[in-house]
Image (cartoon, rainbow, N blue to C red):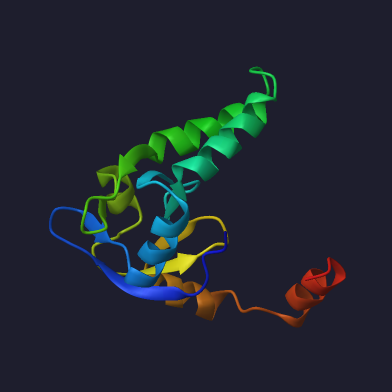
Length: 147
């Protein structure tokens, strides 16, 4: 499953995101309507199909419970995260703590990240593009890895 491209969307007054129809179509073809919404840094929302998130949990479960990196990762994803379900209209509530921290209200961008979706404040995304250009060095790194 590969989510590709990006689409503008809006977070409504109730904190709901209506998934853009191309992504909703792809989602419905392959997954249930359940999802796990989280973040690593609080700057965006990551929306995983629950089946994909359960695979991540399975891999994490193989690490010892005393693994500090595992603990740090789980603290963050669970602090920002909630298991939710898209409604019949393809809407899902973005957790309030995440909406506030990521400054997501009104217009946002929903982008494909191969096996999950990323929701970001549009102005912050465009500012990051301006501040952190994609360089020849970045492209060489990807090329060396067969991308």
